[in-house]
Image 1 (cartoon, rainbow, N blue to C red):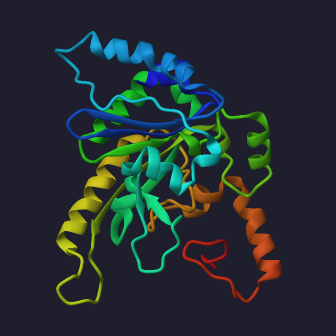
Image 2 (spheres, rainbow, N blue to C red; image 1 turned 180 degrees about the vertical axis):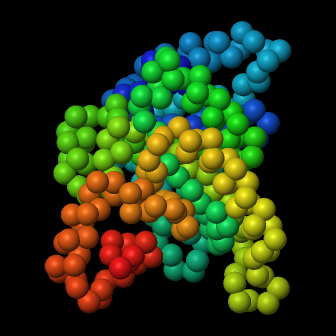
Length: 275
């Protein structure tokens, strides 16, 4: 999978997710742009053929390559007509007809998160010499919990203008060298703190958090410095100044101290909250 990704998907056409989970399972849910459906199918054909040629070792299920016009990607009427299973319409009384959320996001509705960790993976890990280490880390990680490569959240391999624009922001420069953001998380659904009979299971949450930490350990070990995405990260992130902003933090702190010396604007693990 890693070798195939480097050769065929590490470009501006492809994004979204590849999951590695317990039971030696890989699930792929990727988007593409700038290709026809036939071209996208041709890209994946060698990988699917490789898997099909080894029925004693692998099982391939749920295979589908589909293209749809980008202007319909948020068109509820389009999905209700052609793929109603993809969305969940808003069933509240009086809700507009075009209100919906993705069925794939249903697991995040009323979720109480016990763990959420992320780290960027350098494009250097895709080099043939480093692929075995990356594959080994993902295999070991998936024994504890599902880990997902969010390939659209690393800028390496993307369009030059997108990389350039991002380089002119305060984000950790690690995003420019990353081919993916790895995320592992765990939650309970339909639980509500403070409501009798619906509180989160603390013991289960601790077990889930331990599993996520164990899963992310071999992945995080692939880089020397922590590097994580501020909006999708561990609440307890260690060395968060470097992880979130890298070399930019010192300058950001100067700006914070100049324009908000009293700390009016405050967020957990935000610039200046360590003072």
